[in-house]
Length: 491
Ligand SMILES: Cc1cc2nc3c(=O)[nH]c(=O)nc-3n(C[C@H](O)[C@H](O)[C@H](O)COP(=O)(O)OP(=O)(O)OC[C@H]3O[C@@H](n4cnc5c(N)ncnc54)[C@H](O)[C@@H]3O)c2cc1C
Ligand SMILES: *[C@@H]1O[C@H](CO)[C@@H](O)[C@H](O)[C@H]1NC(C)=O
Ligand SMILES: *[C@@H]1O[C@H](CO)[C@@H](O)[C@H](O)[C@H]1NC(C)=O
Ligand SMILES: *[C@@H]1O[C@H](CO)[C@@H](O)[C@H](O)[C@H]1NC(C)=O
Ligand SMILES: *[C@@H]1O[C@H](CO)[C@@H](O)[C@H](O)[C@H]1NC(C)=O
Image 1 (spheres, rainbow, N blue to C red):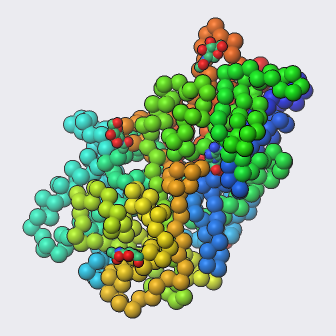
Image 2 (cartoon, rainbow, N blue to C red; image 1 turned 135 degrees about the vertical axis):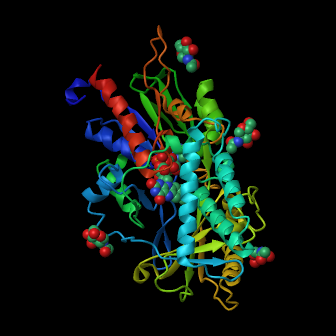
Image 3 (cartoon, protein in one colour; image 1 turned 180 degrees about the horizontal axis):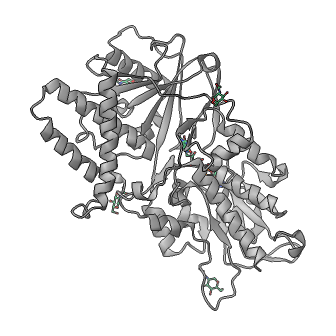
């Protein structure tokens, strides 16, 4: 459809969700001359899991903050560069760690570095071993990871008890950190295939702090404002039908909103999170989704990762510290596989120092995943602050360490338009399921004259190799736009 004349009537495309997948799809369609598009968003603002919130002296990211793979191979990096956003970024060089233990020790930085590297190499080896014979029974990352840890335990059996406890404590911290990257309860829930399927893009993880909302705004600029409907949750998608509009045209899809409005469409691109699909797929689609798709939705992994922002009057940390690590000497990677809601703070392995101080004030951010991350959404900021202060006093051995003056906890799990943070390949799923989820409806069936591409699926969780990221989400939206563009250009 490069020439607009090729289309008698511009097809009506409805995009559900104004996250980066939906906005990316709309942008591509607009550029190709599709004029009849509509983005329907449930929240009062676009962005979805890209969201800035006022905190302290500035605005902090509730969701995405890093460009994973800062190179021209990453479409997010490309866009950031194109829109001049990279000049404003906070340059993250080698972060300076300061690691405390629950016994008030501060660990030697070289020792910590060595142990963190060991933890990464275990994961790399776990991945390689998972593909080898003898490990074919292995299902979860924990299966292989713990196998490696057991070997180390034997190797370290002759060592000083305190040293061994510290080593295992650092490994445990690294493992919890890994769980945060995967938004999971534990490596026992993540398939060994995760590391085979997920592809890293060349380049470092660039801190894009505070800039993702600006990037989204840039993408929205090319979309006429009236194409975006906010505060309009979609309740149901009726497809495979023949719905008549006021002017007598027939459409195969009808989108029903919570407020009772009906919107007819030739094509609907669904970009709601996998968490929303898990919760609503039975009621959201009429006719119901094919069995295979339902199976994929139910079994694919989607977990919670939350951030705990803390603002202090004065810093209690050293000026040059970037990351505060918390090591529990009574933990090993073999323990702590079960959620511990009472001591939820054990799930916070690292706390980042926000920079620059001139812009943010004295702000820290802790990260947490799994059931504990979901649990703290039910606590008041005061409770979180009080528990956190107790934790920090214990680790630093400073009973007078001040309480934060401000606390903010993200709530991605209880957000009914997200229901969690991002996806991974669970032990019950495979990479193929991601492709199954991404397949448009109706499925190609010979001998039927049903219009094609009625319901299309985009969003982070539909990108096989870049799931869980902003670039994966963007590319998934553009992929579905391309599917429609190809459909009309070859017609
Ligand atoms: C805490 C956290 C940290 C992250 N950190 C990073 C990071 O550092 N780097 C990175 O690359 N990625 C990160 N991510 C992942 C990244 O944010 C997401 O992969 C990406 O933003 C998802 O975009 P999306 O368009 O697929 O989904 P979403 O952004 O979730 O968009 C879907 C939209 O659909 C709307 N919606 C839902 N239900 C309905 C309905 N019934 N009717 C209408 N609209 C509806 C939602 O409100 C939402 O706006 C992070 C995510 C979280 C939660
Ligand atoms: C960050 O680094 C880039 C490239 O080296 C540079 O152009 C930019 O000015 C730096 N930004 C800041 C805020 O220092
Ligand atoms: C995997 O499936 C089993 C059986 O349905 C279920 O009990 C378990 O909770 C699932 N695990 C994950 C991580 O999804
Ligand atoms: C779609 O409609 C056609 C014709 O009415 C019907 O044969 C087919 O079974 C329907 N498909 C689904 C998935 O309901
Ligand atoms: C966590 O904070 C709450 C509220 O202050 C308090 O009731 C609870 O005892 C704290 N937990 C611990 C173990 O300190």
